[in-house]
Image (cartoon, rainbow over all chains, first blue to last red; front, side, top):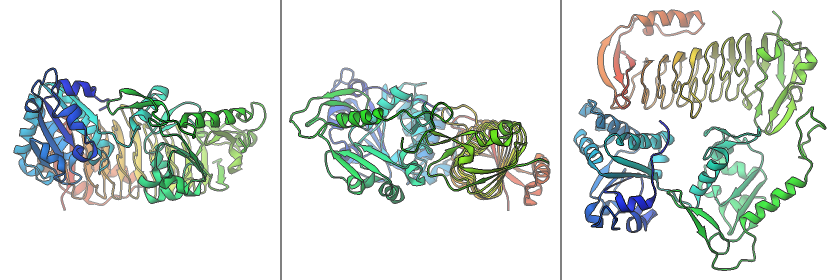
Amino acid sequence: MGGKVTCTLGEVKNRADLIVYWGGNPAECHPRHFTKYTLTQKGKFVPNGRKDRTMILVDIRETPSAKAADLFLQVRPSKDFEVLTTLRAIIKGQRIHAETVAETGLTLEQLQDFAERLKKARFGVLFFGMGLSMTRGKHMNSAALLALAAELNAFTKFVAMPMRGHGNVTGGDVVMRWTTGYPFGVNLSRGYPRFNPGEFSTVDLLLRGDNDAALILGADPGATMPQPAIDHLARIPTIVLDPKVTHTSRLARVHITTAATGISAPGTVYRMDEIPLPLRPALKSPYPTDEDVVRRIYQAVAKKPAWLPAGKGRRNTEAN
Amino acid sequence: MNMTRLTLKGPPPVPLEAEVLSPDVIASLRHDALAALPVFLGKRQRRLDDFFTIEGDGSDHLEIHGDMERVKWIGRGMTRGQITIIGNAGMHLGAFMKGGTIEVHGNAADWVGAEMTGGLIHIHGDAGGQIGAAYRGSLSGMNGGVILIEGSAGTEIGMRMRRGLLAVKGPVRDFAGLQMKGGTLFLLGGAELRTGAWMVRGTIVCLKPLTLLPTFNYACTYKPVFLRLYTRRLKELGFSVPSQLDVGSYRRYSGDAAVPGKGEILVGQP
């Protein structure tokens, strides 16, 4: 396990003849995805567009995306890991008993047909959404799908890509990765990066009450996180940088209004395939950008006396 | 036997990282040097006596009193001696441990005995997830030693373990024995879903009915003789087990075919 076999959306557009959406509803959540990158676009190696492509949707219910699919596979809730693991076995020619897969909501024949389609593709893509990554099993569901994509490369070209949302979340991961070596869940308190999701990831820190202050940029945890985590944010000094009033800014001690990136502030946003796209502002804003605010906070902190470990000069103080 | 006694003055406001709480570090230290040992409160380096009342000089036996739920890395990499905790223990207890004994009269958090290679950890209460597991990005979890848990445990226990013995008396959550490469995992109180997922080798023994992945195949029903040896060993370590463990018959499943692996899951018959 480990690693992600992936590509850009441009390659998907020009090459992919089998597109699988797993636990996502692009028709409603990513409405331009079908038309710009995956289904209807004509590509260099798929000149007839939709006619040259096959789309399979795997989900726990029939969403509007199913209308665009050639094949819809309805799995039982929280059985994605079982289906993915069984597919991994089937593509390797392992024996699976029909009665053991019944609990997944699919038959063995359906899974064998699915596996055969995956192996016969010339260029396959597995797109996965929060219906996979945020249901029971969480990161292991994603790991199972990424492992399947990697193993399919023994037969054909296959890639996997998460269907990212909420603005520039990919940018957060990418920048953390090239600055610390890890995409998220990083702790720098000992002067070097340590990676341990579950221990250092935001929701876990907040749930355990392990942090005594919070700086929130471009996110609204007050609207998305579990209630105990939100309660902790309300208890501690929370600073929010956001162009608008959000659930989090209402419970924060300080809300600094900033210019909206891409509208009144320049910047770089990372597309879901990790391609950086520069943004040019169309309007002027009376508010500072996120970058300005963070830079000024950093300069103010840097002016304070340096913190030194005990025994190397003066004793450290809480004021630092 | 000489003993060093520490009492937590109060719960730290943020997690305290105290890898110095190990017999290897404290055994040869006098009281003053012990008090000045560095611990980390968030990013700030502090002295051990800022948080603990210390009685006696350093010794091979460390007894710690208080709710250490937020004290991490106790007994990290220890090779000898004994740590007794009267209260709860925080994350990474006994991680990378090579020898000695840790006993917790309370609950323990996640990552107990992660990547340990020797020694004994006995938790008298419940434990969190990732017990005896491999850290993220690491290839192998525990590679020796014994972990005994009298209560329940969380997810991903024994993840990527290669050798050693891990026994849990209460129920455990999902992904027990995930990607196991060897060693023996006893689930005396049963487990939730996806037990043994992606296991390559090793043995999982469960006394309660299990919902297995479709990639495990039934092999046979038999009475494994080797379980008598494990039963005797567990009893020697003060871990009581039901008589069913060594005399009962088991359904043997092999897998995980997705990897494909040669692990075995033994499910006890009522």
